[in-house]
Length: 214
Image (cartoon, rainbow, N blue to C red; front, side):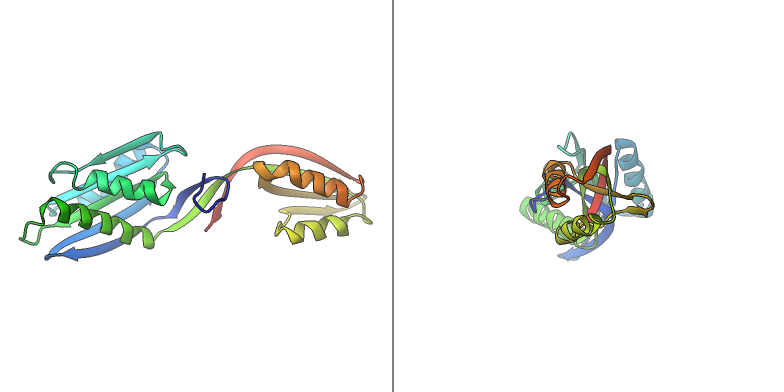
């Protein structure tokens, strides 16, 4: 469930990067959308090659609406100071299907356990700010057929709800196609039937998932 109350879960639409500096150590966070562990592994290797001369390339990723797959690595940092805090930032943000790698260039000063946790946490937070995020929603495509006298009432109702039909055709009858969240479909169908005084045929064409930018 998305944190803003919308049905669905939060995902990255486009990755991004951010950087912080702590006692001359540079922490560079790179994030990317991933749907599988294979995609996550390829992304991690890509960043490791890009920053081959860095002391550490720590990572974390979370995949699946219910965070079914979670992995992280400290890549040589003291246990629990990098990968796990990075994963916790992803989980706290509500983002799923996302991988993050934080590259550290050592600045010569030890940060201590608490300092490392803060630095890796802040780096991921900074990287998230540069990402485009959206909600992945379970939806249903509806087909509506009505007459020319009734279509105005239906379009008025849809307009009040901010729903824009994805297709419309005006022939002997008027036909619309639109996509709405599964959780709202039954209520909407009832309202359309009422607004049309029964002069609208509504058909469920297919169930699907779609994204909405936030």
